[in-house]
Image (cartoon, one colour):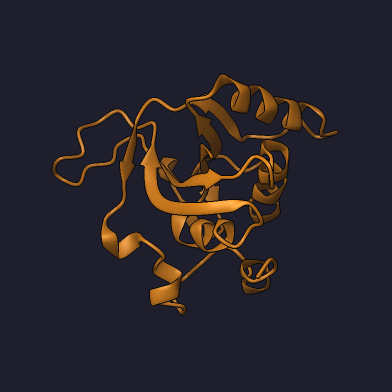
Amino acid sequence: METVYLAGGCLWGVQAFIKTLPGVISTEAGRANGTSDTLYGEYDGYAECVKTEFDPAVTSIDALMGHLFEIIDPYSVNRQGEDVGRKYRTGLYSEDPKHLKESEAFIQCREDHDKVAVEVLPLINYVRSAEEHQDRLDKCPDDYCHIPKELLTKYQ
């Protein structure tokens, strides 16, 4: 199994979508690549993300990037839907340089690559989100989500 961290705006919808994808083994709502201490609930600089464990025999970084691009506006900086702020930036983060190279190649192969605002960076740090954020849309299906409901169930 391999692990990447996918950021696509509010993590509630991203987790609800990502966990339905073929080859995804497990997901966890969290925050990546922040700079501040999180002991007191401070998440300065972190991107909301979904820790995604996947089976590389079933899916690939290329496929995961394709799915991520289904649910985001790849040109938007620090905003997805109604959610605005640095924590809503988009990206793929990984400790595996191979994942980063494959993600960059995915973006570079797009005709619009010069407009894409999706980060591809090494994972510096990761913090698991509180339990109330784990699988949030399963628990509270009427909460706001920037991802259209039909996409959330597309792969179920």
